[in-house]
Structure formats: C-alpha cells, structure tokens
Image (cartoon, rainbow, N blue to C red; front, side):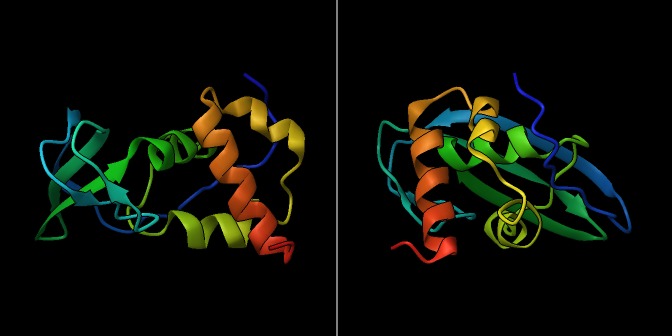
Amino acid sequence: MSDCGVCLSHDVVGHSEFYNSETRKARKQHKCCECGRSISPGDEYIVSSGKYEGEFFSVKTCATCDEILRAFSCGGGCLHECLWDDMHDYVFPELTTGCLEKLTTAAAKQYLMERWREWKGFQ
C-alpha cells in the first residue's frame, strides 16, 4: 500500500472502558453513521460499540466508509461519526490521486473521489 503522507490523527482525551468492533451482514436496513447512506439487507457493515467516558455507544459503518477510515487513520485510532468532517479538514487539502493506492476496493476509491471532487467544487 502507498504511503501518501496524509493521515487522520486524533488527540483523544479520555479512554474507552471497553470497545468491540465486528463485521456483520445486514438483515434489515441500517444507516451509516459516517456518510448517512443506507446499508441494505445483504450488505456487510461494521458495528462498533463500547463505553467511553461513562457513556455507552453503538454505531454502524458501511464497508466503504470503514475502508476509507482505516486507510487514512494512520495512528490506528478513530473517532466515530466525524470521518467526513475530518477528511475535509485534514485529508482533502493534501490528497493526491496517489493516495487512492491506500484503498483496495473500487467502491471505496470511487466514493472517495466523489467526495473529494464535491469538496473541490467540481460537482
């Protein structure tokens, strides 16, 4: 995989008391916590849950956003529900087409390009 030098990084204050993340196949319609698109029955998605700063959480992320999140979270950690705000603030200004090599699926590459073009004002 390419190291395009663009990363999401977070200075997370606090800690998770516990955290679990697993891939599932949807049996009913869900909504991605990152992009807001539908996760349809039969689609794979990631459900992450835990307890952070005394609060329980559970979020569902589509496979496309999860791949993008993992590719650009160079420090290994992530904050849920802020992927695209962080991409706009930290990744898109420095993103090059070479960064697409970080992604393995055509769907993730296509969606990242759509969002990047939109951010640049091309759509």
